[in-house]
Amino acid sequence: MRLAALIAFITIIWLMVLAVAAFLVTLVPSVQLLFKGGERSDKLIMSSIQALIAVGVVLLFIMGLSKLKEFYAARKLHL
Image 1 (cartoon, rainbow, N blue to C red):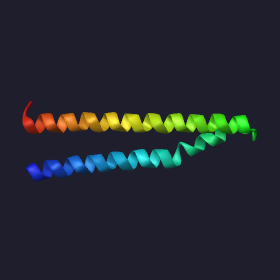
Image 2 (image 1 turned 180 degrees about the vertical axis):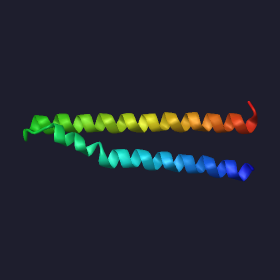
Image 3 (image 1 turned 60 degrees about the horizontal axis):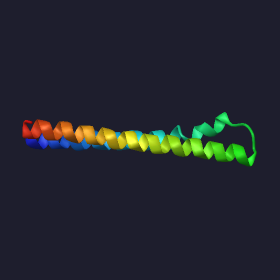
Image 4 (image 1 turned 90 degrees about the horizontal axis):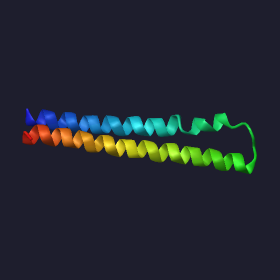
């Protein structure tokens, strides 16, 4: 039973990693479609927005991993 819980924990972590990676690879670059202009300022704004989205998603991912770890530790240590 202990091994099954650990395998489930690791599987959930990897599913979260894959979901975040898929989001960053597919949806963040599509922000470029919002901007039709070819000016340098538009590219700078677009890159800034993409960077903010990527950093925000990574921070949410870290917070999610932290909550998952707390849940797993509390369950295993009976806290």
